[in-house]
Image: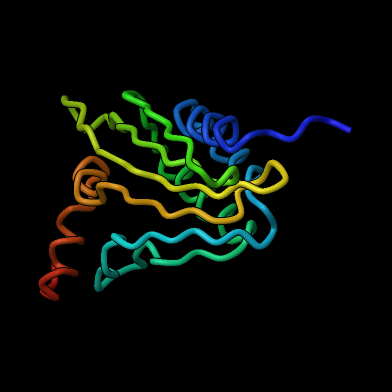
Length: 152
């Protein structure tokens, strides 16, 4: 039987996959019934979907990762600090995404709390800098409109 990945190792694979743009591989790091909480997800723009505050299930995550792949998102990952906790299933990771945005690179801060069981992510709480990500991806006007409920 292969050795189970530790929570730290699962986080490292997840972050490496994001940095390398291997979006199609990421869902396989999650349990079938995984739950991802995104408490700071922005509201829905008038003309499209928002990032949900809760995502349930590996296949739903697979579809979301496929959307990131279609958008051509590329994130550099740096300043990674992983904190191990008293709970052997849980790690807390702090890291920055560097996101190309035209002639500049924007930096988005992130904190992620992962619960890993049997080598798979069963639950996360993702605290991403959605404002910087929206600016980098060109969706800031839609986000501002959604926040003010004014058309873009």
